[in-house]
Length: 135
Image (cartoon, rainbow, N blue to C red; front, side, top):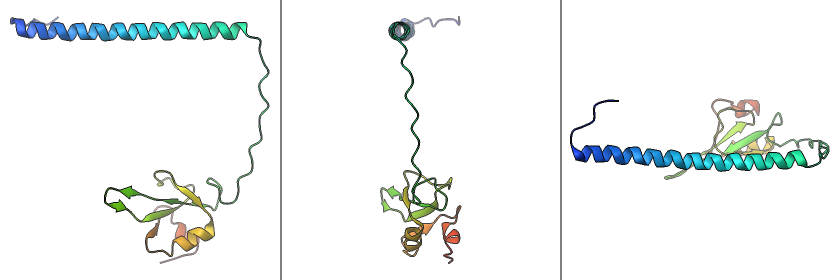
């Protein structure tokens, strides 16, 4: 251990710091013991309970043509800032540049939206080129 300072004020500060760390670790130790007891109780309950067969798997419904993840679909990304909303951005559904929570739209809605001056196409995935809309 490094040499301790000679004055009482700094020694008291060091002692208070060390006691706080000891108290924190004691609290962590108590918490971990409580969690460990809860896991042991749950484990004992599962070992005593009779096994039930797993539920049968459900088939996933087919995606509608405008659902996110379906090829040929588009999403609108809206950004709000402290100064007001920024222009909305249209992306292809698989675009990695989409931020926030995008809203799915159909191709004809994307075409119509891209004619609005307050809506921009993503410069990365270029949905306007895919839709046949060129500047």
